[in-house]
Length: 77
Image (cartoon, rainbow, N blue to C red):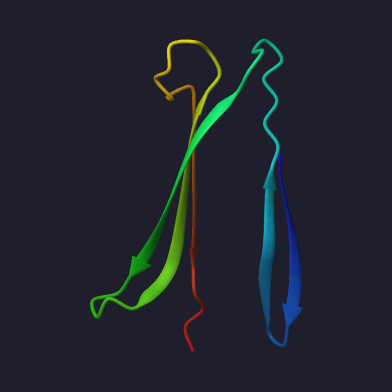
């Protein structure tokens, strides 16, 4: 379940933190690989952000047991 802490700034809401709790009862250990990338426009200006989580809950080390991709774009003026 994901939880966030939104903060209202004028006419927009900014999410300051995002918490993601993952519970897999049958797994004794959960490992993750995280990557972050910028979304850019045709002029290479940052217009958003992407986070990818690949999670391993077993011993085969393939990190394909659980996949999460989160994307957010900056608000256009």
